[in-house]
Length: 86
Image (cartoon, rainbow, N blue to C red; front, side):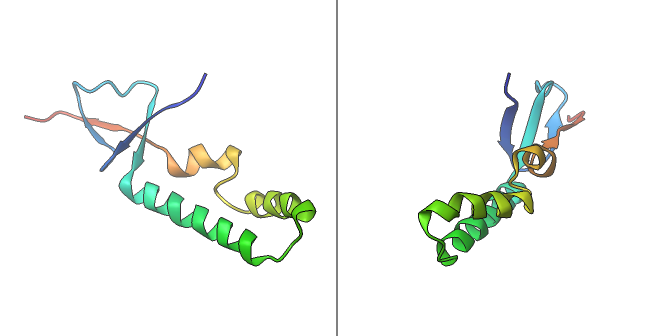
């Protein structure tokens, strides 16, 4: 089963919102994700490695970044903070 994600300006949600089992991808974290991805792709393009070595280099870079699957959710996706409005 996957993770429900809502792109949201902030982690603040109204009490009436359904935030159970849903993570927030704030605009700031989305921009960070885009920047980190751009850096990874640029490093791969600039590496000059032949195709047969590129996958290994990509794995090496991912291992050092927040884009690795085991760190992506923890770093970019946040828990909502429910508040009473009104």
